[in-house]
Length: 355
Image (cartoon, rainbow, N blue to C red; front, side, top):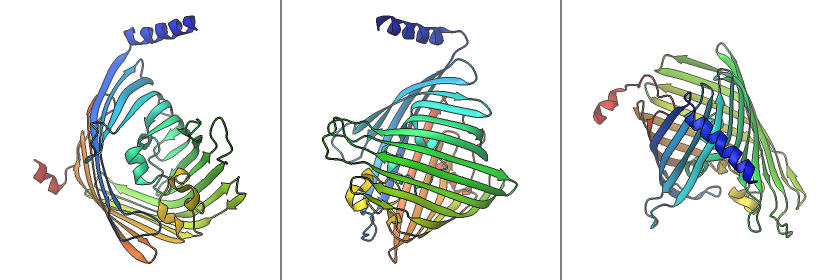
């Protein structure tokens, strides 16, 4: 064992002291304010979420494709009495060239799974659990790719259940037309040592869509699509299985920093085991428990510069025969050399108020 540790230490020292290596760094913060104090709903609780993440990262690259990144992420929740309410560790290896990307470790979910909507991961997942812990592998880039990933979300102990995600997604485009899909398997198992209190439950779901997308420079872009959303929800201990299927449609558009993102679901009620397991089993939008749901997000990019992103949202949820309003503000500030900065900042008329 001692010889192995010395060998690993020697390899790390060799990488860090190699003349070909490049040191990188990044310091930033993420602030979110999410007001969901809407009308009473049988599917979602009315509440307000707020938090401030401090992120300090360092990295070393020893050629154009290999990077090792480590850092700390600290969450402060306004109104709480603790100086730090949550601490996470970012630690991952990244291999990337023009055709392939591979990551292993603990890394930001939004950097690799941005094509997954909140039908899979509700907003609070990325707000309070921004890191995925596992692996990510992708072939291709941007409009033509396929990826596979794993996120280990629960380590089995005497009081905690084992849980993990497996996922597969992809997209292909030709001209204005595209086809894409997103899928995941969530496995919620027992504890260790297994005392018989818990069974095994699973949710397997996927969306397959076809659509059109168009963009003109940095000022206008539009996307519309339609598809099928199918799933298998199973509780092995209770011997219950549900197979909801429904229709989905999307329409997104943005002009000069003002945009809208819309998603429709119509079909079988989903999350049939929610009363039993709640958010422990279901990580997606809770309004999918109904047979009809329309989400309409309207936003304005108040700041969109190389280092600062500030976005204001007004979201509407059409569910249970009612219209529910949600307001959200998200700010991201990052300085450093760890990731390539946006080459050209976008200038909109209202940005004069911040100058």
